Image (cartoon, rainbow, N blue to C red):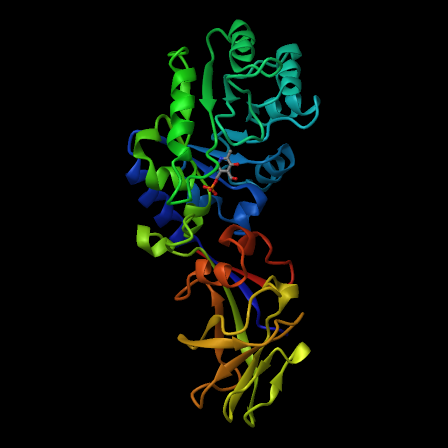
Length: 364
Ligand SMILES: Cc1ncc(COP(=O)(O)O)c(C=O)c1O
C-alpha cells in the first residue's frame, strides 16, 4: 500500500483559532469551513473548532453534510452562514430548517428572502465595496445598496442584520485598496447604526485591526497558512494543520548528466543519488511544482528533481537517505506557502486540491 497521507493536526487548528481570536478580542469568530474545511476534513475536525462562535460554508450542501455528520451535536447550537447565500429559492427553507443563515448579495436572493414565509433571526447583507463580485453597490442604479437595505429593513425590523463586505487586495502589502474599501463600507454602514458589521477574512484580521468590528471570518489562517505571499503562518504564531506526507520507495546512484523523469527536465550536475517518493500529482502534489522545490526527508530539506509524475516524485538526496524514509511535501517543518510559490499558486489551492487518494490521518 502507498504511504501517502494527508495528515490533519486538530491541536494546531484549535491553537490557530485561539491565536487569531486573541487578535480580535471584541469580535466574534466565524470559522470558515467551506471546501471541506480547505481540504482539512470539515466533518471530522468540528470538535477542534468548538470555541468558534459561528461557522461558514459556501453553499447549503456543505452545511447539510456538516449537520448530518455532527451526531455528537458538537456544533448543533452554532449557526452556519452560507457565504454565497441561496443558489435556488428552495434553499431558503432548507437553510431555515437547518439553522443556517443567508448572505444576501444579489437582487434575486433579496427577492427570494423577502417573498419567503421563513423569517431568520439574522441576515447577512453583502456590500460590494470594491471586490466586483457579489453584493450591492453604493453607486449603482439597478443594484443599489441603499434601496436593497431599505427593503430588507422593512421586512426585518427587529432581527439582527450584519452588513458584510470582502476585501479584494488585503493580502497585497503594496496596495491601499483595502483602506478605500473600509472607507466605502463605513460611509454606507454609518447610515445604519442598528446593523452589525463584518469586513475581515484572514488577511484583514491580521493586518487591519481597525476593521475587526463585530465578526471576523477566518479561513486560511485557521489552517495555519499566511494569506500574504511574503510571510508564512509561523510569522503570526500559527501552526500548520495539514501535512502531506509520503515515503521513499527507491534510492539509486546516477552518473553526472543523467536525465531524471519525463521530458528530461532535470540532469544531475555531478554523480549523485536520486530517491523516488510515493507522491504525485494524482495525490495533489501539483505537476506545476518545479524542479528544486524543497521537500523534507526524515526532517532534512532536500530538493525535487524534474517533473512531478502522476504517482511519483524524484528527490536529489545524499547517503543519509534510505528506502522507507518519511517524506513531508508540506506542513510540519516545511511551510505550504513555499511549495505554493514553487507551483506559482497559493496555499489555498494546494490544500483544496489534495485528492481522495492519499490516506487520511486525523490526529486529536
Ligand atoms: C466572504 C468570505 N469571507 C471569508 C473568507 C475566508 O477567507 P480567508 O481564507 O482568506 O480567510 C472567504 C473565502 O474565500 C470568503 O469568501
